[in-house]
Image 1 (tube, rainbow over the protein chains, first blue to last red):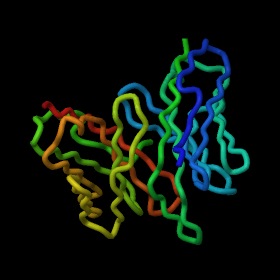
Image 2: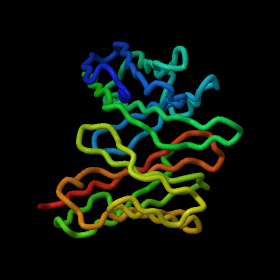
Image 3: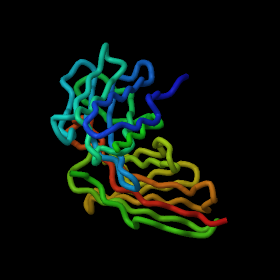
Length: 119
Length: 112
């Protein structure tokens, strides 16, 4: 089946503009994650959605960053008033999750990422 | 803040040699996972080891976990040029929040 799809794959924007990055997770996956990866660095956690629960926004670096997930499927990461330090690859991942009282974080399936360049 | 720290940051070996990468973490975990990333691509899951496991194998991969030392190692045996990539460990907290936190990664170069 189809994997995690992200768009656009590349985005060049001017400082101060808003950008939207889209993620289509694998069908049926209830968990969705956004990470940011600067050049040559590790992955920085941004936000995590699980089913209908309130998202874990603890990794969002500022109030210029927001994300939503509509209908428990597609997610959009929005960066307002972009800054040069926002330049990075934004990675989305989805995961099937076990139900019940014990949440088990299993394997994440990653998209290819959206490379954002802010001039 | 990031949970895992990996060592070494970079590793260069000859084809056929073994490669060992280490990961240390700070808090109690439910499981620890290793991922691989080819240059310019997304990450691919390699192996998951649970907190009650000490060792796990998958093909040429061997992962160990020492929860008393809060550390894990990934061993790739009989390396190939195609193993050239960055390798990341990621930890799932024992508080079961669902969040997966990644380390900074080890860049492996396997020379043919």
